Image 1 (spheres, rainbow, N blue to C red):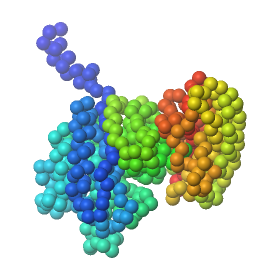
Image 2 (image 1 turned 90 degrees about the vertical axis):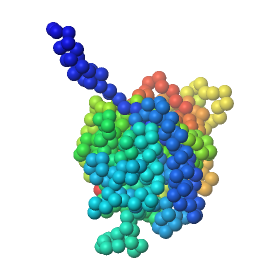
Image 3 (image 1 turned 30 degrees about the horizontal axis):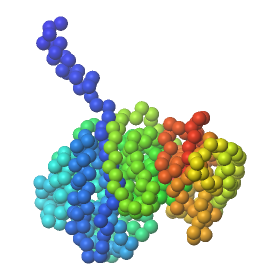
Image 4 (image 1 turned 135 degrees about the vertical axis):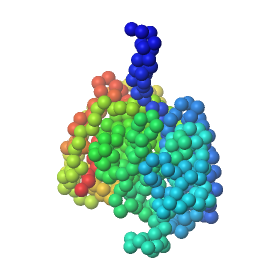
Length: 484
């Protein structure tokens, strides 16, 4: 073959042979300056300037996209209402297909074709400029949207819609996605509205990956998750969150790895970090495999940048299982049921609970060899089914370290359990709960550190450790969320 022709054909084939199979992602756990009455955009710009240090570092390490946490710009304020949060909201432009709006360059029009006044959008503009400066995709929550609506029939009495908002800005600073949180959590309804129906939002990146997104509490609902993953086939999810850790069933990293595994997706989760282990837990997960993760097990604020190479294609596709799960017969319980035991070295045992339709059994074996500082700890089998935690029915079955509850509300404290010293040779949870898109098999060890999925056996309503894997176990749980 002619050498020039061969070289030409080789160059044509080059992208096929050498195309990337991964992208490089970053998530930031971040402790922001907190909102105080009278604060305005300057607070958000101050927190964005702190975040920029980590965005710069992420870019230096080759990251192509970074996810920032829910409430990472504004922090948290217990007394927010619709009026006192207004000074930090911005009337964000609507997103239109294609690259039509670049806030940094002040090139963007409203729905009537008029130029937008960017004096009203200082934080969106600055975030766009940061994305341009470092040539990185930024997914940022906290540039929250206010839309005035005086002539609409469903308009709130104060004449405006206010939304917890995630915006995505590409490497050139263009606005490529805007998502309004679909399900408010607790007091958020005092100052944020919800869309009539959850929004289905996604965008296509320059490196060939389509990303879907939702925020925090949305993860417990069938929409938008079902449409993104099962109807549109999107396998890369952005997840900013302010997650309250409730061990043993609701710690952030456990839920993140469980969602990734159950739905066969890449999951980029960025949690706020300002109140220590109460809300810590960020990570990058691929089909349940932790590529990078972090949990702060102290009471002190922390920042942590996580970076990982993420496979573009997940070979294993999720099985489509209907969300119309049959409800178990249950009472509206307010507390879980516990059956406690002493974790004495060298002992083994089996316990059973049946609570409101949930049958739950644990088989365990405590290691004979423990650390020199070992003190006998109490553990418990626990089960629950009801609406006592969230306005969705949740049922779970699991094993957890049991510590006294200072408020005497529970037989075991489900909020302060962070550390354990007991090594388990084996543990097995068996329940009558079923695998589905909203089923989560989770396990963690001392310090809220998740146990890698490759060390676990996960079946239909079951979870156990693989032979020979000894863990300083904190908790293990199989949880199912039911949707109507």
